[in-house]
Length: 108
Image (cartoon, rainbow, N blue to C red; front, side, top):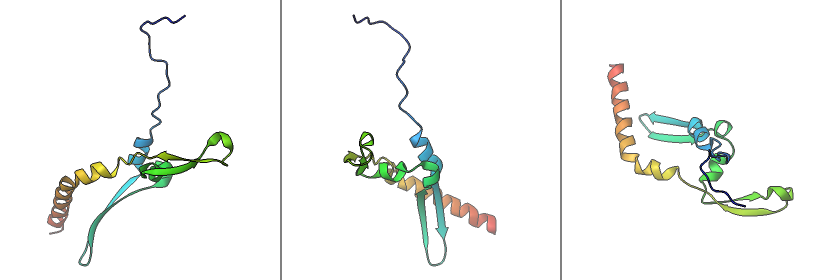
């Protein structure tokens, strides 16, 4: 017999903190020199976990866990990182320029 009534949510929370771990593992490096300039953003696998790069892919293969690794399946990734990064590139360029100008002013 089904009974519908208001009650506290009992389902487990599916959020295990993967996005928080990926954010904690991001390392940004700004290089300014005579011959090269640039910004690199990388993730540290030891902090963000092994799924950081895999989850960014459009598709990836993994073993079906109940079959002791003998059967592999395709799964769609969720490449959410580069979309916002590219969309915010102009703002990032402005902030980087401001940081470089501040560093140069401090050196004078």
